[in-house]
Length: 203
Length: 259
Image (cartoon, rainbow over all chains, first blue to last red):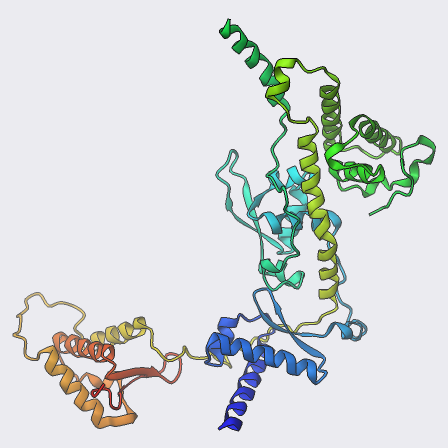
């Protein structure tokens, strides 16, 4: 009976390996569970098992949690092997692109003016580039003057930074994280006449 | 990020400490000046920082770099804060408005700095991913069908099957004149009949289509279907499929009646 159960487990692992191999892309836990006809917790346990076995036998492949799913990937140690076998796109994001992307990631859904308020520079061009790379997407418009477009990150964004999901982002130091108030230039100026008026009424 | 080495990088002769084109914007420049001067964001020596900021802009112009509008906006903001701090405040306002004119700028700088803090990790993650290889998804949809939905059959599929039977029986269109027949079979009777048939078929089960003996009336089909649903609800029979779009098999649940 015990050997039977162990055999069952091995079969689940092998089945998952098959699906992940053929899928190529990240596969959600739900879809994997359906594929091997098992419950979610058992599927997840089998995935962790598979992850461990791959590591244990020193495979060139690893199983990673990425972009809200599971995916087979090569091990980082063998990046060079791959690099010498095939030229890989090394294009990294520019600093403005990375800054803008970080703001979208933590503040989504967010509008261009809101991003501009944080970075202090125009965001239009960078947002367009990020959209072309499919790292961000439009998600409706904000009910605010001018109805500005709202931006959110995409699953490709999660994949690009090897994130399992948005909770996987490095924590942002949020103490005293108040929303940025637009220039309060007039706040003080408006105070003066108001006070004067009040004084006048009191008399 | 270019790291200034001098305490105050803006002494005119020693200026090339900054790579001017490397600034990401006025906030970035300001933040770097604040770091170079080693002062607290909450307590910016506004006069000193403003003159350094303006000197940097002047230098950018000297190098024929177009100074973008946003840098000038920040310069104006700095000068505005400086002038507000220079002006004596009327006593009446002192109590009412205690906010430091630098506070808003400090908050913007903090917010900007907050994001700077995570950039490094994002860069690391970016480089990490570039050391990994992935398979391109294999286009085998046609050869390898998606696994069939797990056992409990969605009600919609049963409904579709019913509609198919109804249309096969040609009872989808209503005749112009119709006779309302007396109920010949009750639901109870039909359930008993159905169960009897299924129990006879035992574990093999009966195909959904075979439950309906053609030709039969719409009433007959509906009452059979209702009987089937009732039996499913009572868990006396089960419905399943071997593959997607495959035949729906109905089987009696052994011992279902005793429970």
